[in-house]
Length: 201
Image (cartoon, rainbow, N blue to C red; front, side, top):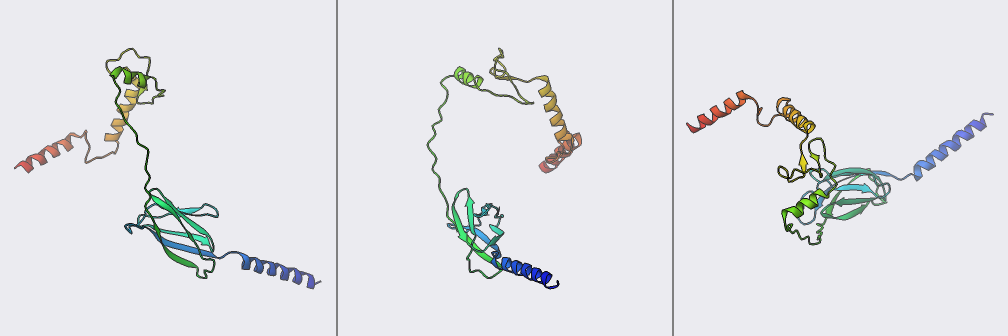
């Protein structure tokens, strides 16, 4: 009766030990990505594993770190640089390795675009009015407006848009938004004028 549980435990331990031996080794790959022509750090390069497409990005100094299995392929991709890859050696025995990945510059030639003016203002107006513009809370578009003088017939501001824009400006200048001081503050303007007078003296 006692032999049966011992045999079961022995078989479980053997299976677990065999599975641990067959599972691939995890390695922490750290490194720096550099542009090959200048040796400057390549920033925000996508570094990901081919196995599951998961990865990370290089930081402002080109540094990255990523856990992988031995034998994994790391892909390096970034706009303006040619894609590159690195294969983690299957014979790696260390728990972490460091690499320096070089990436060549990639030049993309775009087709020539010719920009020509419209022959007459009324032609431009026809093209703009034919667009399907939904408008928003700030700008109400109306293609059927007969008044072409103020906005060339493109749009009129409605009352809701005016109220929303006014409330936005008031919140920006009175609700904590600062850009060198409060623009609507009389005290701030007084200090500014006084400082300018002192500089002239």
